[in-house]
Length: 220
Length: 220
View 1 (cartoon, chains in turn blue, green):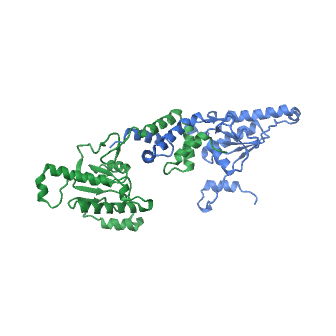
View 2: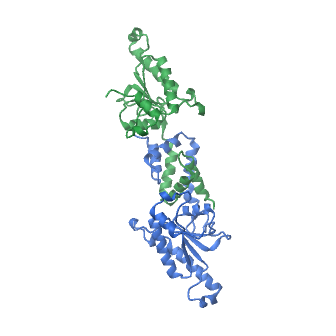
C-alpha cells in the first residue's frame, strides 16, 4: 500500500530536516492529519513568514528582526570584545548562559577541506573589516597615540574564538588566531575553555578531553 | 536575547509535534532559515494540501486518497478476514511486512479509562455493522444455510485483534473479543502473536514478554 500523495509530500518535507528519518516523518505527518486543522495552517503560515520577517545582520551575520541586530545596537554591551561563533544558534546558547556581554561574529561554518569549505567561504573578511574599522575609529579619535605605538591600537581589545570543540572547530580557531595575531599583535585572542563538562565523570572522559582539561587547569 | 518572532512562531509550531522538544524545534527552524527558500515553501504547501487531499475511508477509517480506501476496494484481497488496529499507521506497518492480505478496521485509539476513553469513543459500531451486514449479505445469498445453523453465518470468518501489546491494547482486545464472540459464536477471533521480538536476548526480556512467549509457543 502506498501512502496517499498528500501525506507522502509532507513526510518528504519533514524528512529533509536534519535528524528526522522516514519513520518519524510519517508519524509526524499522520499526527498533523488528526490534529485540528488550524494547527497545520498555523504551521504553514509560520513557514511562509519565516524568511520574510527575519534579517541577517550586516555587521555580525546574526539572524534577527532588524539589521543591524539587537545585539550590535545594544549600547549596554561591551563593544571591546567580539566572540566568534560558527552559527547564529551558538549565539542563543551563549546568551542563555548570560555570562557574556560583548558582541558576536558569526562565521557561517568552519574550515572543512573534506567538504571543500576553505577560509574564503566563511565570513572572515567581515571580522577583519570590523577590526580594521575599529582601528580607524581609534586613529581618528586619538591620532597621537598611534604614532606613539609601533602597533596599531584597536578599540576591540579581545576576540574570543568560540567555534565548536570539534576537529574542524579547532582548526578554524587555530587559523583565525594566527591571522588575527599577525595583523594585530596587541589584540588579545582567546579560545573558549575546554575540559570536563559539568556532571561528567573523570573515569569515562575521553583522552582528548582530559588532555584539554589538564592544559586548561586554573588556580583554585 | 529573544528569538526573532518569525523563528519563534515556527519553533512553536514544531514544538507542538510529538517527540520534538524546544531545542530541536529551534534547531529545525534555523535549519529551514538557511536552506533554500523553496524548501520552506514546499513544506508550507504540503501542510496546506494535507487535509484537502486525504480522505477517511467510511468503511474501515483508514486514511487514503479515495473513499472507500484502496484496501477496501482491492478485489484481490481476502474479504473474510478483518484485522483490527488502533491507528492508520498500524496498517502501514502491517502492509510493509506483506504477510497479511485481508481487510482492516481502524479503531482510532484504545479503551483508556485514565484518559476517559470508553468503548463508545472508538469506532467499534463500525466493526459490528460490518459484521452484521456481512451476515445479511450471506442470508440473501443463501437463505437455506441460515436455517440449517443455530448461529448466524457470516462471510467474515476471522477477526484478528492487532491492537498494541500495551496494557490498554490488551484490555481493548479483551473487550472486543468478548463482544464479538457473544454476538457471533462462529466467528474466529484471534489476537496477534506476542513474544520475543526478532533479535531479542532471552536474558534481557521482561517477565511479561516471557510469559506471553511461553503461552504463545508453537509446534516446531
